[in-house]
Amino acid sequence: MRADVDRRGGPSGFHNNSLAYIRGEGKAAPAEVSTVTSGCARRGRGRPIRHGVTSAQEPLDTLPPMVARELDAAENHAVTTATTTDQEPAPVRDPSRIARRVGLTGTLLMAAGGLGAGALPVPNPLFGLRLLGLPSRNTTIAIAVTYTGICLLVLAWLWVGKMLRARGAVPPAPTPAQLARTAVLWAVPLALAPPLFSRDVYSYLAQSATLARGLDPYVLGPAEALGVDDPLTRSIPTIWRDTPAPYGPLFLILGRGITALSGNNVVLGIFEYRLLALAGLGLILWALPKLARRCGLDTGLAMWLGAANPLVLFHLVSGIHNEALMVGLMLAGFEIGLRAGDRLLDRELLVGALLIVAASAIKLPAILALGFLGMEWARRRGGRISNVVPVAGMFGLLAVACYVPLSVGTGVGIGWLKTLDIPQLIRSWMSITTDLGMIAGQVGIVARLGDHTDSVLAVSRTIGLAASAVLVLLLLFAVLRGRVDAITGMGTGLGAVVLLGPVVHPWYLLWAAIPLAATRGLPRYRRAALAASAALALLVPPTGADFQFRAFQLPLAIVAGLGILLVFLLVLRRHLAGQSGPDIDVLPGRGPVPAPETAP
Image (cartoon, rainbow, N blue to C red; front, top):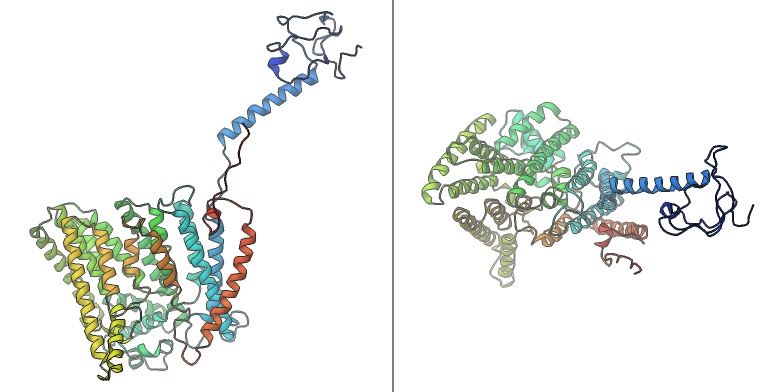
């Protein structure tokens, strides 16, 4: 065999694996080839290959079988790979995955620490249990662990919120489905843990038991009605043991049903009230995205700042406040009422108004939403005062038709209207009007004018309520004239009532924060809403009580919790080193990784 024939039996000149090249579409065949027969030809029919010069118009059309099979396989693999790449793109990594895990770690720490640092019943049913009772025997450590979890959850929520930016839940930010999965995953540990941040649920249990025993909870406090040693009374803070119920008749009727199921079982009663709060939260989850779409706002952003807010998770899911049911009924009624047509007796308008009245029978301030719904209906009819009169009359009759049977159903009449000032027994430092009254009283003491703090406080609180009433009236007329949309008017009006009211708690702010999360102005004030929610979420200690006679415990626990948090963040930073993506790029000190330059 000649030297110009390679080991596979083919011409040594063929080193290009392009089929077009082999078929003679590119270059001419080698100048001189040996006399061999094609390996794919049958015996006796082989065609000799001539020696000498071969022209470009006379290509070599036969190849050894091994070479042909390898070339065909390479071509088929290239086509298959290209087709697969076009049809099945690589999956995109969930940008909320790491933040979701950080927040879940936080809620798990809160649930575990809540076994010792939560608003636990008295006596604690966990005493005597070796494992579950361990946190309650080390309260300072339990509070530290809980604070670590609180900070982790707030940081994770801010992390996802920064990814959303003003555009909302659109790529590369997390999608609404990913946000919903994150919020539910965070809420589950808190829904299964003991109450945190507040002991109000024990007042709910005692007041409902008072009504179930045929006594008047609007006249008698739990201690007088049930006795100081009653298991439902012992868990209530001392200041509220002798005060009647400040809640509406619908809430006490629902509570009477809970008492019929749980009796004196405090733990069972807690989880029954939590189911009621989760039902209200479900109404919020149903209504809020629909209200956001009415305002042209991204639903993912509205849900993240409204329903997944740490204040909601901490005080509605974990703290079991009846604001969940109040706000849920109010928003559901508002959404249904906005669907109404021009008829005064439109079914959707009546159903929406009925739900709002029911919300006010939980807590009275929800009745403000009824006024804004009526003004929106009147605006659609022309925006004149004459359009307001019929809807105002109809709503008034509907409210009376609801309040009377509810008051009769409790068997105690309208006594609930006389106890609305019960929360004013405390001096809330978060209330502007209370702070001004306290400062004025101290100035009088320093100026040797006497201690008139109580009188000055009453004046400042009255001025605040009057100012809030004026602001609500101006907002109602602004909605009637079309200068402000009804949802923004409702949220702003409720915010004025809270901020200028005599008592402010972080969960009171949800009256306004949740509706305003669905308004057009949210993208503009997104950062302020994130910062305010994060700060307020850290204000209330997880025990739901003061630290009288043990003031050293809280600062020690906070310092220890911050130490644990710092270690966790350092480990997380090492884990994220070298990674990139939309979630990594929004972290402080990080920026988008520039794309690599391609050679020309």
